[in-house]
Amino acid sequence: MLPRVKILQRCCSRTALWHWATALLCIASLAINLLHYLQAQPLPLLVVALQMAAMAAVVWQLRHGAQSINLRPAELADRMLKVQESERQRLSRELHDDIGQLLTAAKLQLEWLQRRMPDELQANCDTLRGTLDNTLANVRDVSALLNPRQLASLGLEASLRAHLLRALENSDVHWSLECQQRLGGISEDVSMAAFRITQEAVTNVLRHAQARNLVIRLQRTPGGLALSIQDDGLGFVPADNPADAGQRGMAGMHERATALQGTLTITSQPAQGTRIDVLFPWPPRSGERARTLALDD
Image (cartoon, rainbow, N blue to C red):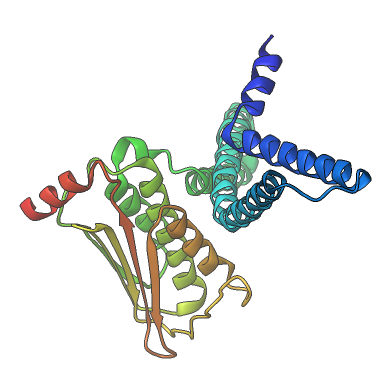
């Protein structure tokens, strides 16, 4: 019964009705033309009007189809981001639940064996336990990078601060996270996009920038949530089309901002550092409340 209802809904949709109406107009026009041709009769005005209606319907279909095609890249990018986040969450669960549990079980078995080992093998057991501890810590770090579970419970600012502490702990980068306002009420999609963009920017700083200082700012503005990431590293020349230039990280930042109708601007020059400015607009219903909070804070 349910498949029949779905088929009926598809057939009764506005686009489907336009398709059927256009097809019927074309068939009727063709049949009447053939009839008058076989009877060697002149075309009445009504038949000419029918042909014009059929042509108008075809033109409308072509224009509507072109507009639909133009919308597909944005829809595809949004879908790819959602699939990517879903896959990251799945990998994070597997790392945390499966591999993490196996490593924990291995530690417990090693402790059981160590209590029964002779003294001359205790140093080897300590080394092996240290290796297991480091591996388990790395697995947890990778799991947290793939799926920052603390976003929902701690919020964007605390999650970013925890990530910066973990990512820059063993580096020489001096960093600061500036947020002078409350960030409550931000949607999950915006929080995730801001986190991922910052995550990618920090990775680029560690891999390429050779920066000494990194400043990240979060601010509520009347226009939306503003994110600024600035470093004093080597800098580079931003490409007009990062994907074609092989800058997949930069392309991913643009895709995340665009998927939420936001804007992302990269300002950089060789030896002059890099600045990334992102603005995520407020949803229409919460825009007025966000503007009030920004002014109050």
